[in-house]
Image 1: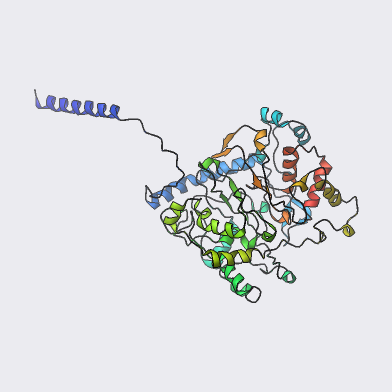
Image 2 (image 1 turned 45 degrees about the vertical axis):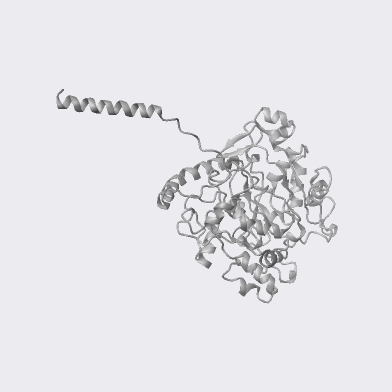
Length: 468
């Protein structure tokens, strides 16, 4: 056999053997389900960052498209209605109805009829994180810019931007009120309280233990997306985040995250950061965890929630084990001082002061509805407008389960009753922020609870809620 022929035959044999080997290889096995996040990175940090930065524009377009289809996102304040420091409150129902549907026609249907006709408004479905498959803490730009200015710490994520417009968020920085010094009004003096200025602002107002608790609440510690390892979502290694980065000035700033309670990822709930105002009047903490004290919640946040409830990954990134008897107690003691904003329209019983209103004012009619046939007070009794319990609205009666931008919209389960005192200062609403205005909230409960309220009834209820 000539040399060329021998080479050709050898190559053919190798190819044949390779083909047999390829055919003999088993099909790829899907990754097994796991409750744990991967600890060892499989690509260099620079590669991860470049890949996620290149995907960012498409992710944000998809989220903006989802929001635009669900809501009227225009800046349209309610005339003459402001939050405690003067920011305009957005008015009107912003949830978009399915074509050919009206709110009265929809509320006349049964849950089964709405489900069968796929008529449940998209804005009433669970709201996904801007990148639900990735999740993680995500901050609005005003918080990012002020922390950068004061501390030189960057809360920007290289892979995502915040998704809701500023006008649907709480005012920034929000006023801070203390139960112990109500005579001072806003003790933050119009500033965002940070580790940079807290001593100047509070020395001589708090006792030493409370002052140290505030210091800890303002101290950045490593977190899932903001840490010093190669598994982070900040360009530079990060010192981490502080409790009051989300609960700005003891209130809220719109920052969002995913609850660490459920697996797989698609079933995790987006979290709208709740206000810490009025913690002293509350007995349940966490939208579904139902922890019984603010001390429990403070310790849980540092040990688990900062790391998506995964203690394995926490060890890698820098878990902060707080001392329960001193540090946790001091942090909780300060949080328990945070008060609701002033409500001059309310009497000492938490209801409208009758000396300020006539019987036919919208607010008084709304109050009568709230404590009457609208059934609101069954879960939100005065004076703080929470029953310190959880309730399951069973919204899954109205729609078939579906995947929405990586979020599995199905049963929400029991959710704690949030306090409604000062509620106009705390948009957006519901545990995941799916309701942008109080008008949306009233429409949601009118439908879900089959209340059959008139347009005037709904308007009166909103007028009352704005006075709380």
